[in-house]
Each structure stands twice: as C-alpha cells, then as structure tokens.
Amino acid sequence: MITILNRRELCMTYDMNKQAEIRYLLQGAGIDYRIKVVNRTNPSSVLLMEGTRAYTGARGESAMDYEYHIFVHKDDYEEAVLLIQRNR
Image (cartoon, rainbow, N blue to C red):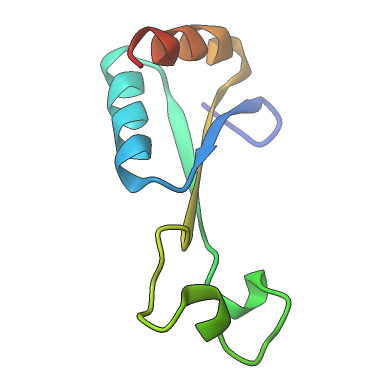
C-alpha cells in the first residue's frame, strides 16, 4: 500500500498521453502507483482570483491546464525508473 510516508514521486508531466503511457507500463510490470491530478485553472491554484482567462488564453483550455504527478512506493522507485527509461 502506498501512503504519503512511503511514496516517492516518479515523474510529473502536463501530457495526458504520457501519463497514461507511464501508468500502462507500471501496471504491466505489477508496480503499484498513485496519481495526483492538479487542475491549474482552479482559482485556488493561481495567484489572482479575478478569473483564469489570462492563464488559459482566449480559446479556453491549454495543454498545461493539468499537472499529473505519479507516485510509486519508495522500494519500487528504481525499478520504475528503469522501466520508463527502457521504454522511451
């Protein structure tokens, strides 16, 4: 079981396809993981509370609206890093 005390951040990406690819690799290798998604357009995650248009542009969402943090158990960290490096 992964808890906040025994986890280690494997990676952080803004790319939804990349995080899905990494999750698929981890699952295939039997490595337990947790993912944290941060919505960067949420008013609590930006400094100005007046709106998010300045952060998203005139057309709405941008490619950097969501941050994906992938965590693994600290004992699985090295194996997970090697797995990702082999599959680049």
